[in-house]
Length: 446
Image (cartoon, rainbow, N blue to C red; front, top):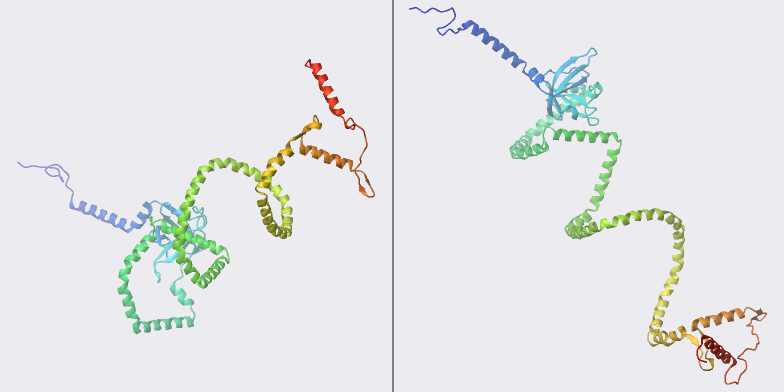
């Protein structure tokens, strides 16, 4: 029994593709892959994330879209995305940089087209951060861009004597290499490999912990430092001159510096001990600081009030200098006098002071009361007050004076005590009668 099916279908009923159709499909895929490979740079630029920076150059200097690299301090950060020539001969170049790079360019960046090698042929755009921190608000103008200087242009600008000198230098270099220079270079190359590994470690360390940002930041900071130094005209020259002067002084005092360095360990040991003690002192001071704060606040007020006093006292202090100068001989003479006074005071110490502190002091401070014929006379005032009153009365009585000087006035008079020879004086009799009258009035015994 014959099995018939539709045209182009197999036994299972599936469509069987013809070889021609498969060939066409493969050709289309090959062309698509080729086109993608041919435009891989453009595709990579379009699909990459980042920001666009527009730069105005004086001319389009062999920049290639999606191929020319963009670098900052030698570190690739993007590529040229488009190059457009203007009517005046200038060129507007758009570069696409990675995320965050635009914010690191500053407010006034500059750009330069640089050759990859000394002979040129291939170039890249070098972005130089500048201005304040931030991102550029507009395109980079032509004034802040530069074009490369080719070696052939430099050679054409050289004068014939300079070219002759260059040829002579090449000839002398050849002679130097023939006279042992080649062997020296061979030795250098032989010794160089062991040093390359440490040099690589140094260069790797120079890139920092974040190679994409640390080294560019360092270069940008150095550029800012150079810009500040260049803005201060003459400042760098003054700094170098001062460094030269300082170096000359250090050279002249080399022995002193060496002696200082030699004694530095002992000094550091002493400083360490002093700082340890100072730490303990600061600990105690920290404990008393809370209590001292109110005093410090009051002291501030006191000092504010003391300022006018100090201003007024300044002339007095100034005049006191001359007084101290004049008083110096007196003070010098007081030294032996004080020594003699010390000897006198030592002689007074002992029986003399005991007598003064004993009976003499008791007599001077005791009140005077009459005894015997003078019973009933006296007062409760101490003896020294009576003596003082006597002296005051004498001074008052001596106010009279004549051509011979002051005289003491005396007055003659008669009183109850003027009559003498009696067993009892009239004053005592009157005193006893008064006392008897007082007791009688109080009802006491007569």
